[in-house]
Image (cartoon, rainbow, N blue to C red):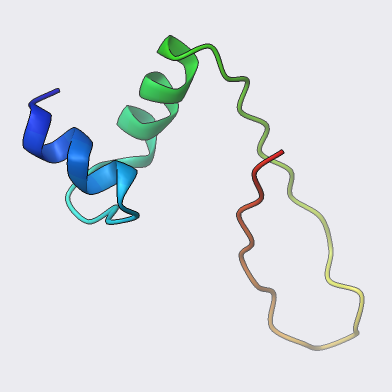
Length: 54
């Protein structure tokens, strides 16, 4: 990955990079990536997306 793109990622700019590439980079850096999908807690409500770092 070119240094300017890596710098953008480190500053929170994720435009122009696919989820697969981001996951591959995180794995290469020694991180596990878990994707969990579950039903929303409220009936008939739209779901949301959340990213957490542990």
